[in-house]
Length: 348
Image 1 (cartoon, one colour):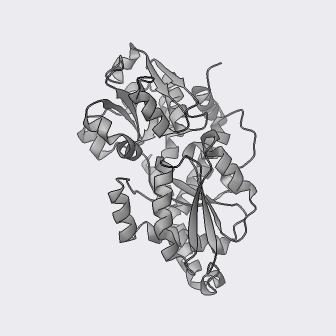
Image 2 (image 1 turned 180 degrees about the vertical axis):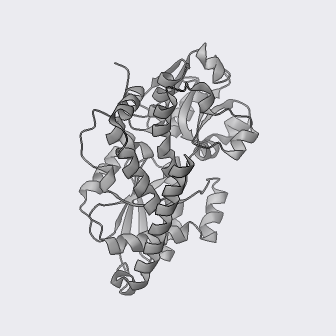
Image 3 (image 1 turned 30 degrees about the vertical axis):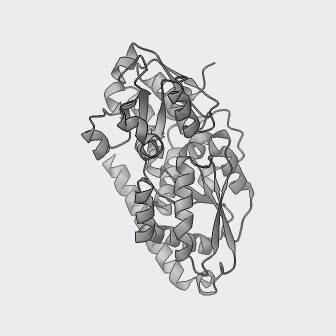
């Protein structure tokens, strides 16, 4: 795993160096290509959700780092675990760098893990702008659930809310149901995490899995602070300091040695927890201008202050870093990929 991370970091570093060099020489930057233009940022989730919050705060500041200072307009296009937004960006044939997609990691890996995927976009062909966060995902159970811990879910059934196949809230519930001893049933069809949390408060659901810790804190803080919602397991390649302090166990404690590589392949996507993509037709010069602007925004004090006020975590990764990781995942051994597909697949 350490070698994997070092390779990706080197790839990200190279991409950043290239971006800086391109910015210095690009005619697009010098000619204020973006002056008077509007960049549409398409969010593949509902207004008010975690992805929407991240995107709107990014939009508030990223234009300051783009020559010409274009307006960035955020639009929501929820559906199919954000695959609709991914399809829209992919099919746009956008060549002037005025379209950005904010899509779920699940939409990026869906063509890899979902055997029914219809092939309307190819994740390896997107131009990756960057990620605002490397997500540590968690499961949360309400205090009314029969299982008060993930360990007890091995003997007590829990009913969790899900969005749709391809969305992390659905896929992670199915994944843990199949790769651990937890007796999990996932009910799909909810429009997003806020909808699921409201259903949990009404007593319709026992909890949810696959939500990022930053989003859960942002959307359900009163429930957590009141002790009504318990964080029962953390799902990440590396544990989170805050979750460790809370005593939240790692998912690897509940996975067999045989199933660990399968889970690890899926969890790799968390390295791009809040990914932003460009059309495959985006000219390289414009892609570098936007990548540089994204990287600069991730260090912008005003951006970081607004993110902190909104209680969202920023742990960015470069576009080159994500591009390399996605390509590596899609080059994985087919037998391992098939096992992951079966672990995520909806029940027959």
